[in-house]
Image 1: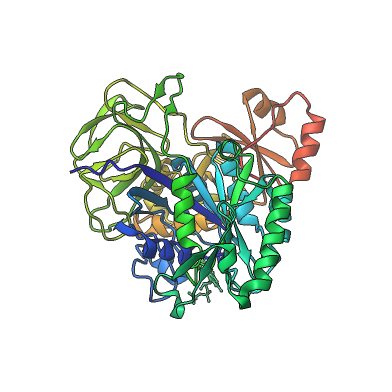
Image 2: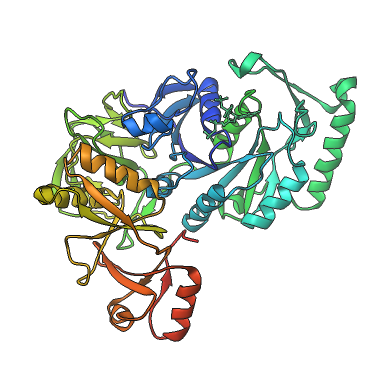
Length: 520
Ligand code: G4P
């Protein structure tokens, strides 16, 4: 029977070490996990679902694949789509955000807003994804709560509207003041945070003697915040003007239930989407979905190619024949997986907001739409500003055919962007990526999957700007810039640094030189 309970689909955006794995585990502890998708990629033994399909992942103790975790809480189905959480960036990290309706920004109370969080936040802002902020590690000494509010306002230009306020400074976490009810939610530690931490809700008059001082301090600050228009406003939150804030310790399991409550109470549910021709697909229209990630090599024996799709509308039923919008061809969904990573089970039905993995999806590419009934094609998933560039040549010239095939495949999957120019010729394309680790993925997969060793050599470029054919013509021969063409036809002008890009723009005012999204 299909589970049609309301959905919430979100991702956690954070800097490595802010506690994303710990929080994911804590969420799973509070809710009933339906399908575990290898989403918890922790380092310790406690984490049972480490995804290690690549030897490289294992060696580094990180996760390169994206996965999703589905669980039930208060009669809702929650989909947590994982953003790969290593110190490097990849296009996948960004793309995941096209598949969610809201994001939780996890901030380390000791560190404030760190670079990777800011980059991911920019993508949320660009896509209009509402953001809930969780200040984590409040059990450890850190910045003051008011300082953190200032940082949020300053760095991401969103008005922080705390829904809970800490009772006790960072390092002395007694509980939180629920700003909506004025109650004290008192936490009790459990050994290692391995079980749900007991919470006690009480009115202001029930606060015990030994908490009285920190409580009155919290009340004072709460009143100050109200005077400062820092109260939650649902419309402004959905419009991306404010971010509700709450305080937590993922490790101690403090604040985790409140986060789940906030997701249910405030985060948007899956809504209608607009196609490229302006047609609107309502959630209860015929089935439609778009692919936000493609992955192959999950299983060496089968050379599987998995396409991860977010369902936009209608009910998905395994075995249904859908139309692939890009080719107009039918695609049979005989094998669809709810679970990503190594252990997989097939999914029978799925609803808008859910993520499914289509197996044997040779034809599906990132950004592709599949549908039933009235044709629909969703806008392409944006590609992001690459900041790292290498030239690629076949390591073994006798295996050039395999080399070409491998590069083509990795390009289609969006592992790297492949750039070419007449000048460089076809034998040695330029590979571009958001983060340098993508190149290690390329090297690994070229050898192990395509049996085509590859030689990469670094280029000095750091900045890419979009240009057009006349721009490419005018800039040819100009010092310090090289124009190449991406497989999708886009011309990219590459510069050694930002300064060089700005100078070129000044000297060639007629040339189109546009910034690509989310670069810096
Ligand atoms: P990540 O996925 O965002 O990279 O972070 P992860 O959960 O792995 O957490 C990074 C480190 O921060 C871990 O410590 C984890 O235990 C710790 N941590 C996470 N949440 C909290 C919290 O609320 N309070 C405190 N005090 N620490 C927290 P580690 O020593 O690096 O790893 P481990 O050996 O504990 O796994």
